[in-house]
Amino acid sequence: MPRVTRVTGKAWDKEHLAGALRRLPRTLREDLWTAPVDPLPPAGTPGWAAWRPVFVMLLLFGAVPVAVFHVQDMVPHDGVSGIPAYTVLLALLQGAALVAGVYRPLTAWWAMTALTAVVLRVGEPVVSPDLLFPWSPTGMALQGGALFLLALRVHPRRSAEALAITLLTGLVCSAFTTQVHNYDTPRAIPVLLATVVVGASLRGLRVARSEVVTQAGLTAEERARRTLLEERNRIARELHDVVAHHMSVISIQAQVARHLVEDPSDELTENLAGIRENAVDALNELRRVLGVLRYEDASSEGLRHAPQPTLGRLDELIGKVRGAGLTVVSETTGGRRPLPPGVELTVFRIVQEALSNVLRHAPDATARVEIGYRSAGVTVRVANTAPGGTPVPGRGMGHGLLGMRERAAMLGGDFANGPTPGGGYEVVAVLPLEDSV
View 1 (cartoon, rainbow, N blue to C red):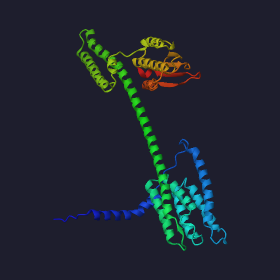
View 2: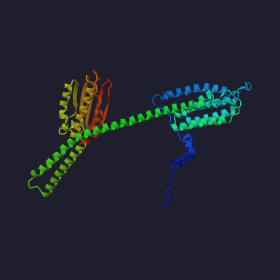
View 3: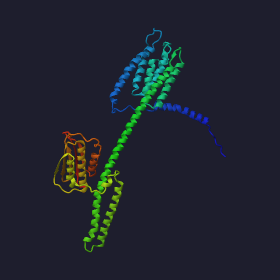
View 4: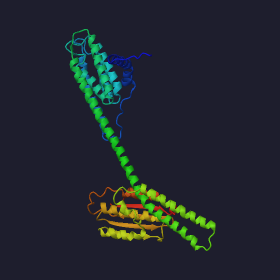
């Protein structure tokens, strides 16, 4: 019987800790060396393109005086040797690293940490023992600024690791000193920790806002997609009635045709029966499609069996709009002739939606409806003058323009809308006839 090795909780904790320690060097290398930082906001982000140079200039103006005062921290305490050139160079390099942190925060933090170690090791034997060690106020400001810029651009875990390495560097330098100093590590820890916490909090706020904007964009796209599908659903229901009417006519004609011929042949009777059977099957399928595309609102039941409008009811529509208080001028050009049912329905709906929009947005304007018959198609134009009254509140949230565009595209036509030079608005649709027969 095989032996089963049981691992106690304490042994498991030891193994887990040992594994974490083995992975620590690789984790630190990935977090603080190879992993990229958050990119700067793109130039198109509102406000950032204008404020980035201002922020860099303010940081530069702040880094210069801090670097100058930092030079004084490294002046030999005997007052005889003067200011060594290396102190000026190191202070300028630290100030430059702080400014570079705007664009390369990880590299700038490494440079600042290395320069701090060099300053402590080179300057410690000659500086005054009364100087705070390992971080003077100016040195703490430079190191804290580098940590703050890093915390703005990396995950909080990575900024915490950088803070730990910074404090460890200071403690190591404090352990190898030639003089007795006033050590300020207990004061530096909360200051640097607060700097990292503030930077990480600001980064978290920026990430949260970015996610909200992204989610809002996805929501807007989904809403637009749903609106489009609703309009196509409505258009498909209306076209169903047109197609169903034609299929019913075909079925009736096929049934009656054999009675119009004396002694019809078996082949003719069989073909007519097949035509009627196919027409009936098509009608049944259309009814199933109608069930799938049914309206979700209660008013759909009343509209299910209503006949679809044609251009013969256009004058009636314009009369109703005039009765609502809108001045409408109608004009027809070209030779009026019968149009395919789908085209007639589309023309009627475009005029209806356009006049409804005029009532909503320009109730005191004058609308003009133009229908032009051409050899290859029909043109619909509805324009209104500049609005002279107050739009009706709460009634401008429909999908009229989207529906008009979808209807025109369904027939292979073109649709355009936009303001007119006089302050009005117009919609124009060009519907071909060849593809609609």
